[in-house]
Image (spheres, one colour):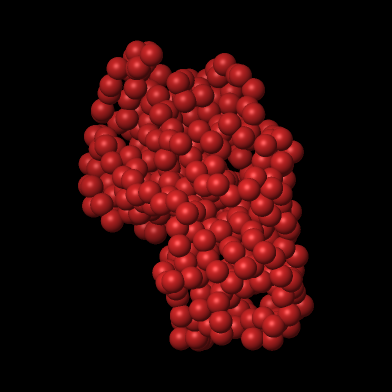
Length: 397
């Protein structure tokens, strides 16, 4: 993409003119005579999530939030759509002049639309395919979405009679991403799929396009994805504080050194996932038994821990509450999970005497004594219990 195009797109995005125009131009389609399900199932995922933490603010947040969240009620399916044009930027599926197939859109909060001008100029010059599965065009650039909603899509293909050698469309930027290539190198099964890499500026007209979707956060999805990684058997023993590099991210602890000093007394080492290779990150999480982590994308890698032994405390600013990592831990069957809330990240001032004010950085403070109490509770947790906050249940098996 040349610099002129980048500038124009940046202007359209920042001015919201581009989004307004896209919303008017594109007609979103999610049903019709040319769309049918080869497989479809609805399920409630982790509907029995325990909500019993010391932090009442977090309890209230979970009660209020989870009822609205898509994780509670989901569908898994394989959708067949006739005559779909797949554009090359994000591999979004379109039909006709301005119909957008909603099931091909990955991010719906900040809704994705194809760029209109390239669509109008190039839609009559595609490469034709009889049949193909649409894998991913944008999510795998991000490890969170790679693990949560992309790889697991492949698990539902076995619930249909599609041929095992059917072409699977993957966007070039996704294919070249470190997360895709890492799994490609580790998993003979993942590598064995008939990957069709969609190159930049390559438009694909597919007579029969198949779009799979798995149950995100579902145990079957997690099991399928974890097996792909062919993880070694490791007995975890490390105690790790997972922090965030303030030079690279916009959130951090204002009293981090106090937290590190306290945790050091209990044998914790400090780690920054962003400073490690993917191999090193996987190894670190496999070897960790006790984890204290600042909320953030690095925590998605609890996926690689030993669920039967993993103990986790998540530190979250009180005005940036998130349910995802607790929900993930519970659906994985992780042994221990607790939450400690920090201060309001928008209200706590920067510690100008001790910390350089990096552009865009916001800091928050966590009560070290409250955190230490939670750490002691975690380190002394009974070996025969599975614990989430103040909820406990006997270990099974």
